[in-house]
Image (cartoon, rainbow, N blue to C red; front, side, top):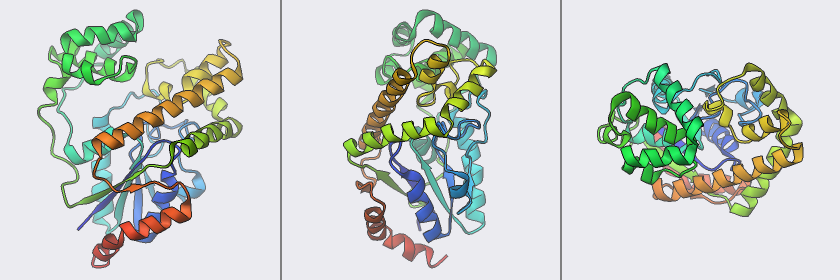
Amino acid sequence: MCAAILIHGPTASGKTQISIDLAKRLDGEIINADSMQVYSGLHVLTARPTDQEMAIVPHHLFGYRDPADAGSVGSWLADARQVIRDVESRGKVPIIIGGTGLHHQALLQGLSQIPAISDDCRSETRAYVQSVGVEAAHARLSQVDPQTAERLETGDRQRITRALEVWMATGKPLSEFHKSKTPPVLNDGEWLGVALTPPRNELYARIDRRFASMLMEGAMDEARALQERNLDPTLPAMKAHGMPWLLAYLRGDMTADLAAEYAKRDTRRYAKRQFTWIAHQFPFWPRIPSIERDVRQKVIHALFKEIDAAFSNR
């Protein structure tokens, strides 16, 4: 029996609506697997479900961490494990949605057992990356952990910093820890994954329109609130889509129009990387290629006949 539904897809692909439709149909509850939607104070900029949407069916792990919390996949995984077990214990279907592929992967494959990193080491590593630049930091990572460096893009500041801090704290490369993992939360036969893969030109147009709407709905106010807290700029929340450019505008470094264009561009690039992740990491997940709700409903009906049959016996 399939005990959980996983929905992955690029940003702006309509994961919220399809998850609500499924939750209503399967008597399910929705669990967030997006690394940015865990943060409070970023309701608009991370496109979290609205209060009205969250009132339709139960939602979990949305907006529950403070932006000052660096968090990690491991901390999210521990929280998700507990929520999934609670949802299952009440006879409900966990519907796990998000565009962060690593979160889904951790649920299904486990996570490397990396020792806790001290705050001092984290701060020291961030300061180092800030001082030498991300490309030089990547070059350094290539010397101490070539396997990890090879799979990371030279501009991926967050993951490069993470790999370097593991090496600085433990003296071992991150790739060494990847050889042993924790048990998966969901085993084979306990889940079914679905990937949303809408036409790219339609998705990119939706990204542009959505960011324009975000500006009208308070995204700038969210950025200003974070700016006033003087948080470490390397924190994940400070890297939310569009946030660096909105902060640049608030500092007077560029015009509002230019900040918006850069934000849209970066979000489109991120969506492209998400498509690549789906292709490489989830090659056997069923695809839902349309972005239209009525078409998706028909595809879901075809894909989930076996789910309906399985859960009718619960």
